[in-house]
Amino acid sequence: MITANDVARVFDTILSTPGMNEPVKMDLKISRKNVLLLCHLIHDGLNLREGSSMLLEGISEQARAELESLSAECLQKAGLIEVHEKLAGISASIKS
Image (cartoon, rainbow, N blue to C red; front, side, top):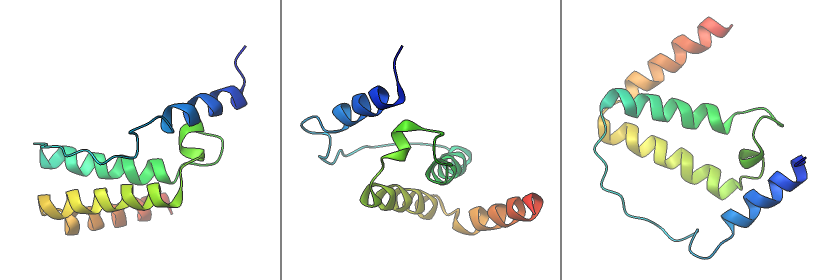
C-alpha cells in the first residue's frame, strides 16, 4: 500500500523535473463565469486545511503568491474584481 510519504515523494519528483519552473505563455479564452469559478477554486485550494491535499501541502510561498497573482490578473482582465469581492462578502456572511 502506498503511504502519504510515498505520495509526497512522487509529487516532489514530478514538480522538480527539468523545465517545470519555466514560464509558459498561454492564449486562453474563458467565459466570465468560469473566471469567477477558477478564481474561487484557486482561493479555496490555497486555503485547504493541512492533510487534505498532499500536493498543496508542499506549495512554496512563491508558488502561492504566483497563483494569487494569476487569480487577481484574471479577475482584472475580465472586469470582475468588484463582483468577486461582493460574492466573497456574501459567502463570508453566510458562513458566519
